[in-house]
Image 1 (cartoon, rainbow, N blue to C red):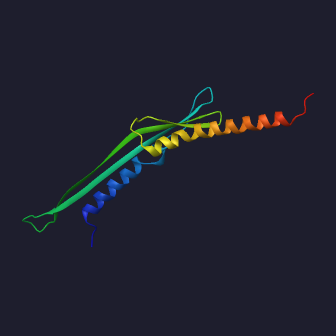
Image 2: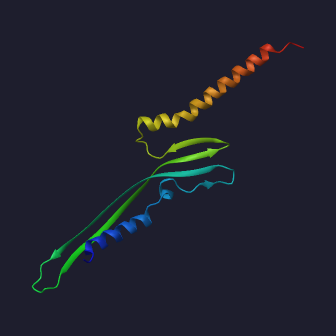
Image 3: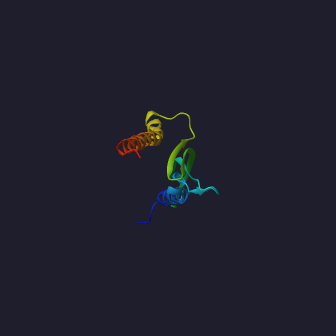
Length: 133
């Protein structure tokens, strides 16, 4: 039995979606500035597709088919990862961030502050244990 024409429409639609969507569109290619800062774009990608068809009645014995398909993609930049001197920061584009996004964004600052406090504490202890000259 021959393949129904709607299968061909759906197959072509899916193939075109595969061509359009890749992980490079979600996490973009790194961009390095002359002063050594690396910027990586992060996007939200939404896509959808529809395919359909119908067998049309005819007065002749010949089978008649009508169908179509389509797809749509939306890409929205949501953030940039900025890497500078080994430090990574997340700069959000959208002001409508949720609590999880805010926590993730503040983690680097908290780590920097805790690291600074630990370093100062070690320096203070080292200074206290060294004999005076």
